[in-house]
Length: 464
Image (cartoon, rainbow, N blue to C red; front, side, top):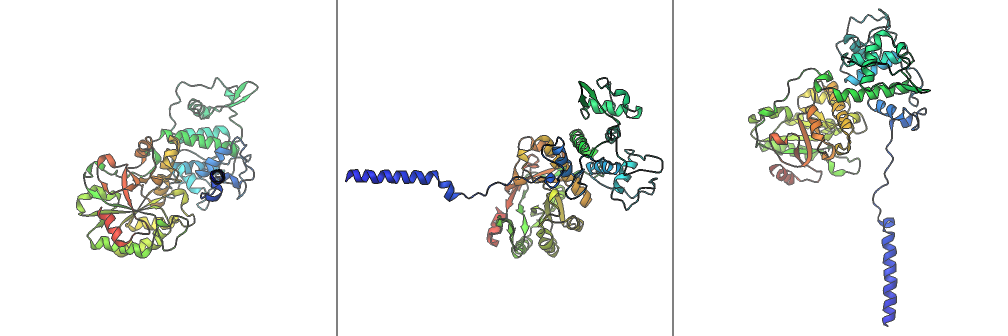
């Protein structure tokens, strides 16, 4: 009998081992990770093996360049003057000047898609015409013309004591471009091409679009590492005097995402019903709370019971469902927008964002450029996320954002020092309420308000 039990026990053990070994087959719950789709996947003439492929991806992601059609980039085609000036304009933040009546070019009209770029570059003495009266937008750029424009864009800094003696074709550089080339070589923007053991600049060679993508993205990286916020061309705005914000004031900073009865996607807790939102706003008003936005913090003493309504990601329901409620109760809210996602499905358009900002009830702030986890990024990538988002929102709303919400609340030790260069406040995603302190301006905690909350739970969360 004992032998029979041992036999059964052995069989049971073998069975359990088989189940354990194959448990992933029965209990796999995570969907396989999809390969991240790249912008350049749509272009049939750019492959991952091309030396310029990464640069094309980066240039298109920054909107410095676009394809020549839906499915082609034409990397071997010439980079025209119109294309290049448009790229520099986009790099600057594309904040247009007032229409100019002084453009002397007969071949550039206000109907041209590159008109604002030409006007911007001409006013700043970055780019002039090919002749006194012609801009020649379709003419192909040469390499030395591109280097000269980079030099002018950078303010024509001193070239120092550098020279071009290491290049076999140094005498081919035109006299008007020599300072620019010395500067570009010294700064590492131009390295030349090695042929038969000699380095060549090829200054008069036509600039191809694939090569232009490399030059533009390298110059962009150089620029954002060497500029300050004051260099970004933003109109002067009085900075927020954070030192005047009193310490020790308790502020519930409530965190929402979408206000919608319908749910799209798997994270249903993010979708607060419209009726629930209305009840919550009414409760706040009935209980004496006053909604504020970040610029109001300098006048915090005016508010007896301040509260902040914040919403992440820029969902369409913020405009269609929340905005009417804000007008009904005369309340304010802050919406953190991911600028690369503007106009995507379920996300607000530029026109909707502009209307919200113009209303005076909604403060539009940054949720980064692309919603990447900041803790995973290099310093250069962090600068790009901060800079491009700030410029895009300033262009859309006319107001420079002063606060950034960290995607998923993630950051590392180096994140804050970079965010500080661009924003006055940094926002987390939990652990509220916030008790004001000069030490927590970049670690502002929030209280999450999920779809499931009853009004009683909401009230308890606000009072906590």
